[in-house]
Image 1 (tube, one colour):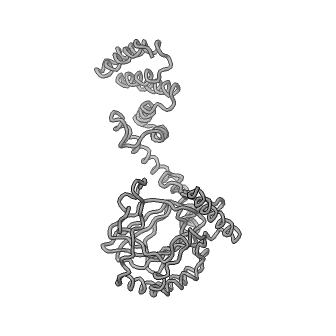
Image 2 (spheres, one colour):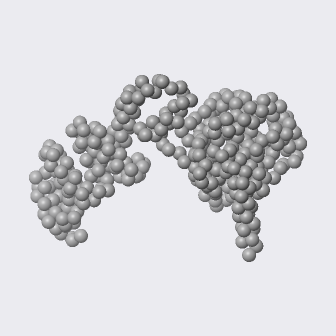
Image 3 (cartoon, helix red, strand yellow):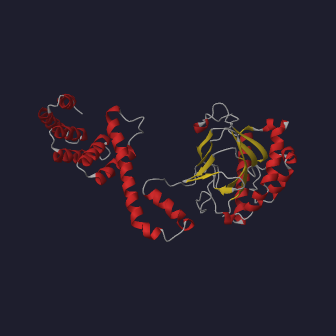
Length: 391
């Protein structure tokens, strides 16, 4: 880039700022001769043409800029705005959507692009609504022929297709077992033992109440406990905080005998379940308490070989739980099982503490041979790492 080109572009920019469009175009023609590959020349020509209210020439200049540099963000946003001004909203939304895919977040967008960036967001959202409304009207007659259970997956598909939801996939931090259905909440038919666990709710509640009323309540410890210097990411507010605390009956495959003696009927109920049986990793079973007005941020678990069971025990008010695109309200006596490698989060909106029983069980889609073999490789990993630590 020559000094002459730089100076010419500066003069053209000053002319544009002064709304001297004709002079700007003349300077930009000179700059183009100096560097025919510059997308910025074409972008600035589009500004001059818009000042002259020559929208066709402005659009042609933007197309020329994007032919030279397809990811020229200012040109993409300007083209979207120009198309929207022309009433070509669907075309504008497509251009805006492509621009947003490469743009930084609203907090990091350059100030000179902030307004058109906000305009792009609004235009894309409006187009999503128009598209969804059109499709809903198109399928309405067919949709009403079926019940909620028959269309549940389709309804989520529609929301994702129209941009009102996003696809969620397993994102385990440790081990992904391939070929397992990437569902959020598992169908109850896969866990017929859930009903018996739900029937045990009153006795489990009573044992929890006795623990909370005793000195053992001090054994509720922060669930999130990163050591100093570790990256805490979204866990900053809950790290080492009793706002989310746990009382373990099992942890990483180790049975807490004292805790199980304090809650013997709960321990018996756990023994009836297909607990994740991997020494050093599972089962895990715990009373989990969430303080009033506390949010557990979106996160994903370590492996999809397990599924996680939640049984509500203390629900003093509104509280909800989301897995993927499905959000459920807690209801006493109703348990559920989900894949925690799919993004999930929880909120206690009540004025008092919410407590549930959390249990790790096998993923119902794993066969017995797969369970045995995956248990061996996880134990092998522990052995390997212990050996590395000694060397």
